[in-house]
Image 1 (cartoon, rainbow, N blue to C red):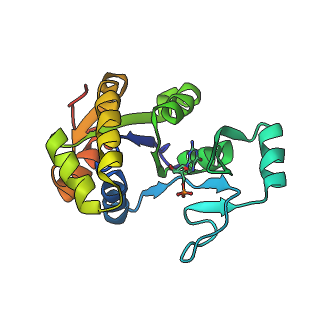
Image 2: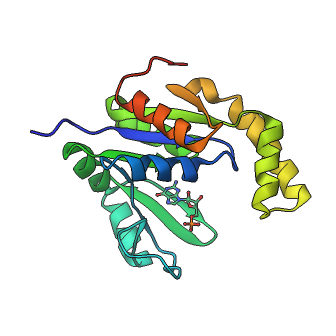
Length: 191
Ligand code: 5GP
């Protein structure tokens, strides 16, 4: 019988590198995969059904919600997004480690249902200055938006004590390996 998998929930400020680090972890270790949400938004070019999302109609979404199939859901920019119990249960029961990149509220919801299966991890930048450099290098936001994101980052960082572990993203590969060791129970840097 397979060993039960873990739900790895990762949170951290915008620009800290959550996606990059999680992609590195997934690419280096085949027992990790991303949790796939259901969404009512249109598929974007390059997206494949069942890879990062299951694309469904609003009617189907509402039915799932009504029937209690969703552990959590949000409406964002006019589209609905949600996580299915089934997606989580099937993965961890078959021994896969499921990666979820969530904000604090989503993390709390998943943790309240799957307390013993979750590892909640907060990803820190090496410094606020470095976070600012990364946001500027991304070139996606105006000065005003960067200021706002840095303000939010300070607030998010102040909640880091709610998490089981923290990791500093100084360099992508070593950060992903540190997370791998945490999941394997080989590291004891509990916060
Ligand atoms: P996008 O449409 O750009 O793929 O995602 C929009 C936002 O929805 C992102 O911030 C993403 O993290 C969030 N999101 C995607 N799926 C879910 C979900 O199942 N639950 C929650 N709470 N947020 C989600």
